[in-house]
Image (cartoon, rainbow, N blue to C red):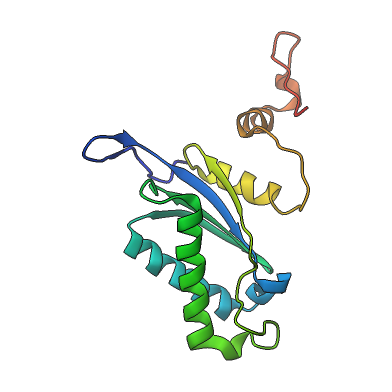
Length: 169
C-alpha cells in the first residue's frame, strides 16, 4: 500500500526525498509508555512539520524511542531538520507538560543528543513496518528491504529449483 507520497514538482526539479529518523528521550527513559506524552509529542511533531512544509508519512513509538518517516524534506539538511524537530518538541514539552515526565527526565533535556537516520525510497506501509521492526534492536545487521519483501511474499511450496535464492549475507 503506497501512502500517497508522489513525486513533487518544484520550480526546477522533480523528485521525492524520504527519510527515516529515530529519536530517543534523554537517558533512554520509557516516557512514551504514557499515552499523553506520546500523543503530545506526536501533535508537536505534526505542527512543526506543517510549519516546515514537510510530510510525515509514518510515525511509530516504542516506550523509549520514536520513529518518524519524513518525505519531501529537500530544503533542509538532515542535521538541520533534526535540530528543528527535536528542538521544538523539547521546548514545547518542557514548557507546557513538564509534570508528565519530570520523574524520569531532569535538567533541560527531553531528547538524547544523538539520532538515527536513513534515507529511503518510496515509503510503503510494509517498508515502514520492516524498518521499525528491524530498528528495535540496537545492533542489527542490514537487510535489503526488497529481498525481505520478496522472501516474505513467497511460501515454501512456491520455491522451485528455478527460483532465485536470496540471502541477507
